[in-house]
Amino acid sequence: MGYAHTFLFLIFIQTAANWHPEWVTATSNQNVKLAASYLWLVTSIIGLWPVWYLRHSFSLEPEARQLVIAGPYRLARHPIYAVYVVTYFAIWLRTLNPMFLAVYCMWLILLFFRIRYEEGVLSA
Image (cartoon, rainbow, N blue to C red; front, side):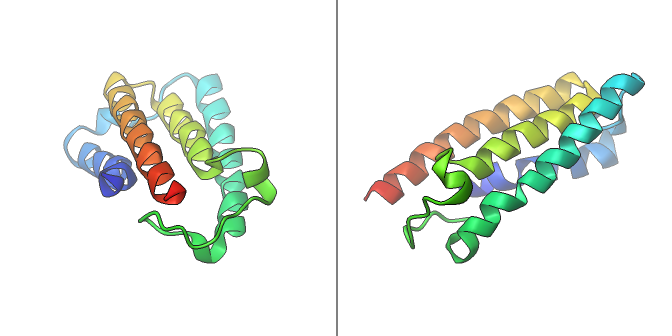
């Protein structure tokens, strides 16, 4: 499940670029495209903050190595996922494509299950 969540967008973007480029083509609305680009840039930079605090505790598979409660983890339980949600939304906003939105919604569902799974591992 974690791998599906992790690689869903990468597989979608690669597949769409090869078979349906219109699914990942930027919108013609310049204002939306510019706002989405700035949002994408800002969240990508902010996304480095929680990764820095995790450092050696970061992995694809959840493991209870060390409890991190400093930095962004003081503010949110899953700051990396929060950044992903906004970053992927910004990427969708650049396209405004319904197929991209469908994949985004599917990714959100997988994210929900991944968070529940991680909570169980970390609680144990």
